[in-house]
Length: 84
Image (cartoon, rainbow, N blue to C red; front, top):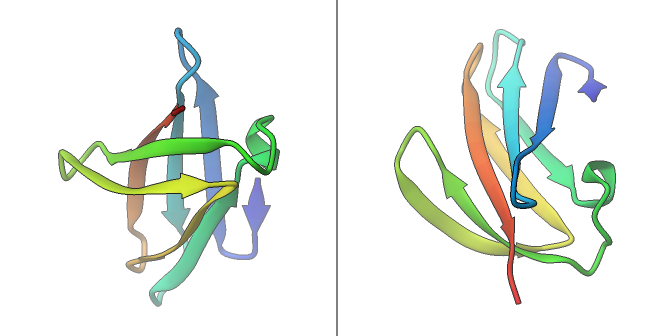
């Protein structure tokens, strides 16, 4: 998935979780998010979100990971796990 100067990579993992990388190729900070529909999940899916590089849980998400500010030439690596 590519939108201008940003890229979103996603990889399904064993057990149903999805690893998502948000990358900003621009020279300025950019707001980047991802819809669950683009991952093959329904728009009503609820998921836990973990920032793998910061080693911390973020707010749970429903239907999408809301836009996050990604520094210029920066990235986030997230782990999304469906929740009940």
